[in-house]
Image (cartoon, rainbow, N blue to C red; front, side, top):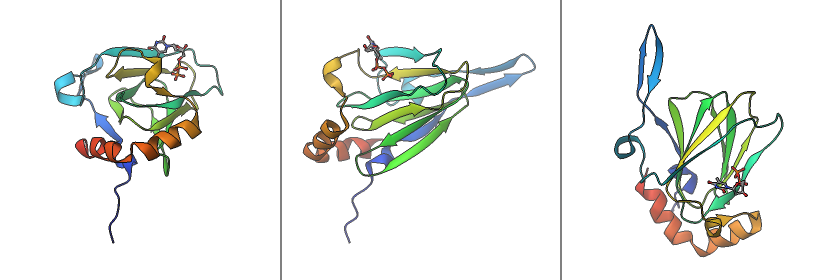
Length: 153
Ligand code: TYD
């Protein structure tokens, strides 16, 4: 039986180096080592009210690594067929999200900061903000998405 790889397989946790001593912890991120794309933009979510949810969109081209720099939150990923939830709560872990994945960020703890490193400057044209539009886009770009996800397994 031919099994099509789940595109969610391309989403994974990246472990950043952590240097610990009696003064505390230090982590660092080097684009060429831990990030599988050139970082074009950095943005962060903070002061998220309890119960609020962020995201609620997918990207056509943009790749992203999300880090819980402080506090914790859930990232729910959806490839149009399957959903998977990642709980982020440590600043030395990042979640890599390839293009073509619907994401929702929920259950923010108080004082949480969600840092995103992304592969594109801000471009509203790269967003798929309606879930049905996302599903149509996935269907029409299936082969392309499969290749991209394969790269980062
Ligand atoms: P939005 O995409 O809704 O945020 P999130 O997906 O993280 O919940 O963005 C909120 C607003 O901020 C929207 O008007 C677009 C704007 N924005 C920028 O101008 N630049 C950026 O880098 C980002 C991420 C958003």
